[in-house]
Image (cartoon, rainbow, N blue to C red; front, side, top):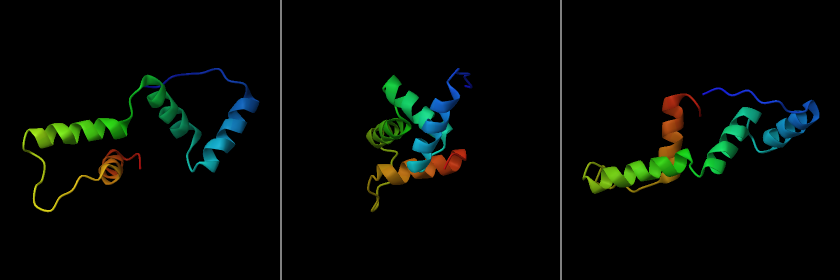
Length: 82
């Protein structure tokens, strides 16, 4: 979903610099903040999805261990956001 915000130019420039210092675009920083504000994050959603698959017996078994960061990065790569 796209949203439009009215923000003072100086605030946007300072926010852009802060996001860049974190290695993110301003767009990504705003998305991350909104996910945090909403109480959900993609990382937590991925973890919940894997737990559900594991409980259904559909998660890989032999030698596989749960690595939330690895799964999250893989999902971002598949969606073109990484």
